Length: 142
Image (cartoon, rainbow, N blue to C red; front, top):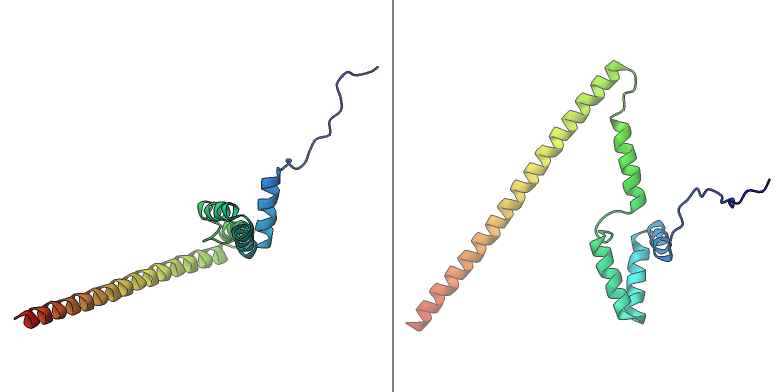
């Protein structure tokens, strides 16, 4: 009773290539490891450092949080919307979340108005200085 098919064990984890293993290792160490790898790449072989820089920007590793914290925050956000089984508490939680979201939107609108006012004042100051310089140049030429 010999079977011609060979037994192959089922793999629980996919086999990762060297690039995926390196990427996972750097992700586990955090943003500092990515920056250190990029700096070392620039020091020893500049095209490697440049390639790492482009990859970090393209994959948004340079400007975002690490993958671990993003997975954790997604999980925490999903647990926020689960029902606790207590209808009074769920109503209170929904109202509190709605109020906090409204406050956040109001604060973001306030910050936007503040930025616009600052930009306008800086632009007005620039235009005033430009007008003063132009009138000064006209008076000097006359």
